[in-house]
Image (cartoon, rainbow, N blue to C red; front, side):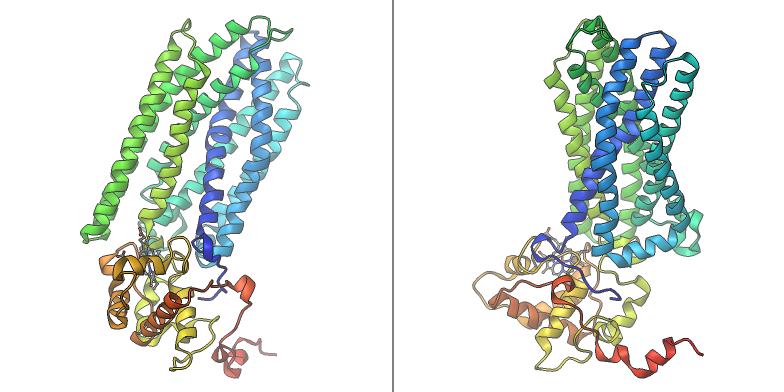
Length: 484
Ligand code: HEC
């Protein structure tokens, strides 16, 4: 309401972009940064302790790949999350920043240290040629591993908070936000998952780096057996952790959902996601289990392609997991505090009696008349619906209405208005309509017009902004002027 709406009509408004960037970020961050760095540090340490230059060299070569990917796509998608969420949901990211300011500030320091440590660790590897230098070098790897985990540990607090802020909703205290009820199970789940997938990544990439004999790799088969045997233990142990924390996490979520909703539909919707996720988790764990157990037998060489099965399943699992996590949070962007369209829970009743247009900054009109009805409806759509729906594109509102009211009959405006006023009761993933009856009527007029004249809705980035006249009332401007 207080920000112009950035909006891309054909991409479900733009939230798809957040989803794509964030998922890619997680897919790189978890296995490579959080999972692989500690494992590579451990390889370096083991090689040093047991005088195995071949293991050291292998760790170095894999680190090169991890170094390139994490410092380019990994870091850039991290920044991309800030960019896309600030564009698309500035109200939400603004609120989160106010709550988590010091947490995020710390995260920024940790992130900067992480990047510096990655550069230092990788670029000084070859220079650490004496035992005392090597010991120091291993310590850089340990520091890097801790920092990589810490960035995730800090961000997971924000993710858990968005679904269930817990005590914070009463106390508004920073530490209550950080230690929200979903924090520990989610952190444990992500940590073990990262190590498990990181181990499979190392295992997979070692196939490529242990092919040829060389001065630093005199016995490729011995080296490959070494890494497979060790990593299979890592996979099996982290599998147990992933399963245990995953179960704890998923048992923690339904309680809150059940408590939040008395409507069967949400539970049904949720149950189907829940079941799908459990099935997927089950198959993924079985695939990792088979690979892990297979690797325990040094002589059996699991073929390279077999590792792709748990890899693909885990990519799918984490994608589905993030999607389910985002879906279940609806209609909230911050649980029990702010709806996905930026309306605060506490201001809802006020807006419903006073009107949304009166209190939004970037709208064309304050009062609805017969002649401006459709324009008002368009602004209301932008404010109340556009964070989740497009007009005629992905998750398009016209497509949804056509499914409800039929493609060839005229749609009953009074019925539509009634639906909109009560949509949160039958479809609990949608927030309550944050406006008056007249505003619901204007929205219906816009939707009817959109049906007969499908038209792309431009966002503020291309249409420009209009500030409603009353918002510039002299008295208001005077109020905001500093007194001289
Ligand atoms: C928090 C996100 C969100 C907001 C905000 C939102 N919706 Fe929805 N809406 C959804 C989702 C998700 C669905 C279900 C999509 C599906 O699975 O088909 C849906 C479905 C619908 C349907 C079809 C309902 C049915 O029973 O099939 C209509 C109509 C609809 N929305 C209209 C609106 C209108 C009008 C607004 C704005 C006043 C709005 N929505 C705001 C998320 C939202």
